Image 1 (cartoon, one colour):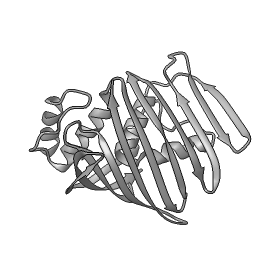
Image 2 (cartoon, rainbow, N blue to C red):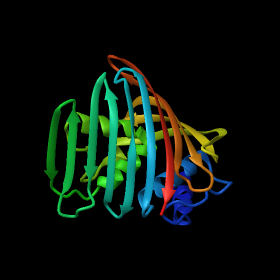
Image 3 (cartoon, rainbow, N blue to C red):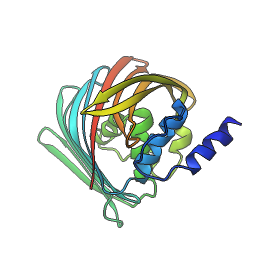
Image 4 (cartoon, one colour):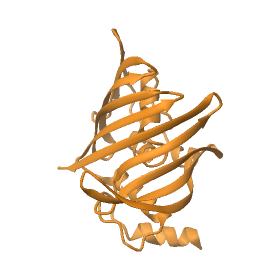
Length: 225
């Protein structure tokens, strides 16, 4: 019954940024954020990511979600005390350009086209956080699940309504949830989703690794062309 209600809610939501219904449950609000990121056209966001503990990092950058599978992300800063810069560009349908810079070392690749690059980035921002995908790029590796399977690999469960807040003058409400990866509890997360657009504005989470925990904050500011 809950699954049917969720499908009915999503069927009534146009894809892309739009106001979140005041009656939305926590799970519906999170699904609304995913829809906004998956379907938004000519949507540009700036971000700042900060993590402490395991995988300490501070990264800033921009992400452009154009249309369909076309997107472009650039980030720079430090990861584990090393200066880094990464770029991923899927706007050319003939291939994906991926570049990683670590200090004076630069590595560039042209990967084959992949049908789910936008999905991996969009669902990644909503569920696991953007940092994970940027770390993969920092390691000079292609993104995971770009041919499908992300929805089953990473899940947000036990969603609960959180506090109402404001970032950069935009009101949002938090969704608190548990992050599961391959069915295993990996983190406790809180995502503040804008009332007016359904886009994520700020994330806090604690991720549990075998070698220690990582606390992280991600902040986003979006513009629609």
